[in-house]
Length: 143
Image (tube, rainbow, N blue to C red; front, side, top):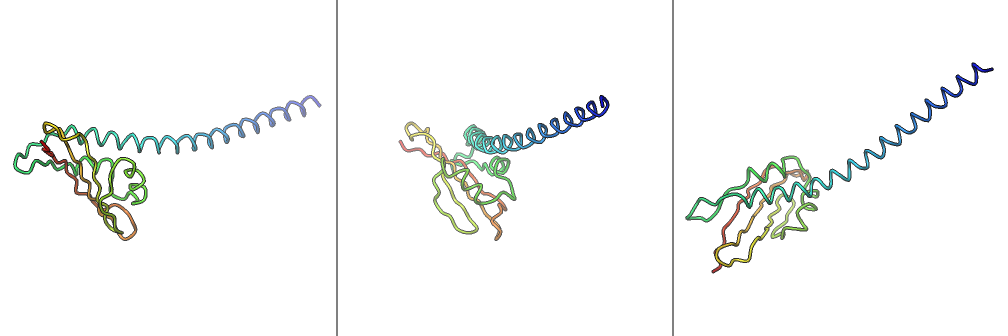
């Protein structure tokens, strides 16, 4: 009888440990999903920081190609809706078609040459996946 009671208690504790672990995995999955969304927003801010730290060295065009920076954060294969949702709060969407998204982010007021415009042109496949981008930082002298 004591052996049966001991075995029953051991089995019961193993089952309860398994349930706790399963509940923890589900909770971890939810937290991971939330942190992924937060990291995407953070990544957008990191991208903007990196873009606006870029020096504009081309005096004639007053532009700097920042496509390589954008491709680190908005990478090939990303879904168009995901990108659109990510940038729509901070960027002005200038043009949107099935295979193209053209957006603008303005920084500064234009006094004494401090205005910078950041343009992103994204190209998508028929399936709505990002293929490539053409992005540049533009110095706007609105004096």
